[in-house]
Image 1: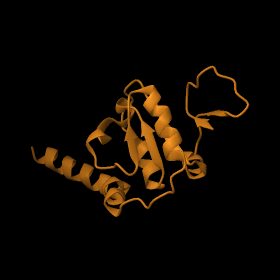
Image 2: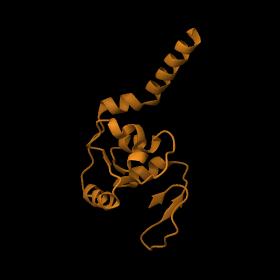
Image 3: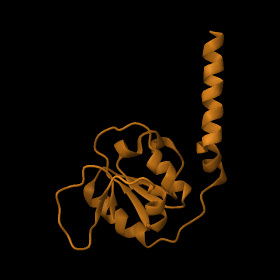
Image 4: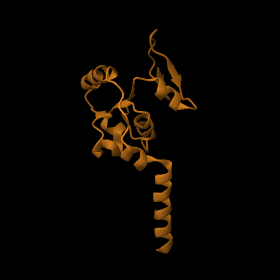
Length: 128
């Protein structure tokens, strides 16, 4: 199943293009891995955060991984811009057992922590 906007014009009996969905978590939970073959920058990488929070491995391009390129997420995030390697990593990782998401990651990217950081930035800017 491939979820998201602008699916390629490919027809295959084993591939379903859902288009955009309201609750992507249900699709992430049902997946073995999440692929993120982004070629153009598109803002914050919330899908990667959601996938890792759901204990899923992600295969992504460096553009798709964005700010996560420098994160220590080797157990969860494979980054490659080589399409042969990308396909190999999908096959290699689809068979791996799921592992628990580190508590440090959950805390860092929790909505509560993000809102706390935004609040601190707003308070700092209001003082200036």
